[in-house]
Image 1 (cartoon, rainbow, N blue to C red):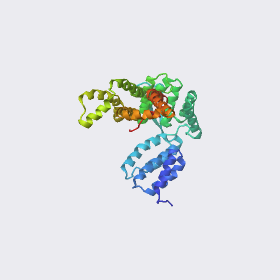
Image 2: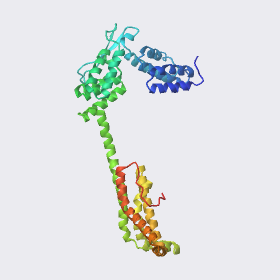
Image 3: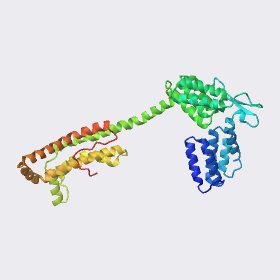
Image 4: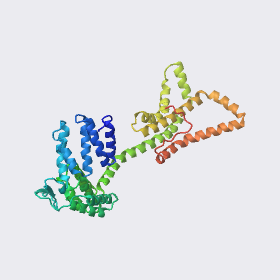
Length: 401
């Protein structure tokens, strides 16, 4: 009895089993899911496609073909057309001994492939003596794929060639053809790899043809590479990342060094700038013309980090810009306090001098803060190149942003 209460639970478990390549467990779950949802449900098509793929993965060709044939009159047009396209591929992969009519289509490959040569097919009334790809053949194929994964290319070539010879080239799945081409290239058999890829361009499905084109191009660009596609990918990544990485490094170094530029401009500012600015705003309501130039000099150093903070698209640049902006906010606050509150600071210093221990402590803290303000930009640059994942935090600053 099929449970229809929670059909999606079977579907989820089936998809998980397929993802983990537990095809035998997935098949009954998929069959229950199909039966539970019914042919009219949109999930029926999904379950059916995956069920055929599960049979195909287990090389249960008769079950996969029978299920595919049963969809020829299904009301779902997409599923019906999909089954029409899938059926020839399944028939092509089914071993000779499994064919019900005893007839088979053999694909005969040509050793030396030129542009004028191709593969051709013949029909035999009787099965040939080619052995079906049983467990021993599958072990041979798996051993070849494992040798390729561990970069034992000569062994991979030998095993995969034996496997393809026993089951016939056309009966193998596309990933086996691709694996042999990669093994040839890794074993420095570039000519064989080129011939095989040219052959796959002519007789493979669309995905295999596209891969063969890419592999041939990669072999031309990286003739000495054992894995041309990997070399091509690495070269492309380097070309794409080189400029952004360099520009980011230069920008962040310039950002922190701009602090020294601002400090070098500070002697050009009158000591009473902020006091005069406050009085002008308080009594006149406007900025006096003679204050515009020194005010521009005072604001200039903060424009670069402020622009990065608001305009940069990279999060790293925004964080570094914010830290430098907070640095200048702190410097501005210190300048305003020391200028506008100088009488109060003088009185406070007079009181502190009467307590030598307290005065020495305040003087020491002021010296530490002053040194940190001068050394911190260099520390921030060094920190960036050593620990990019963590932004350097300037000490003794107000973080208003």
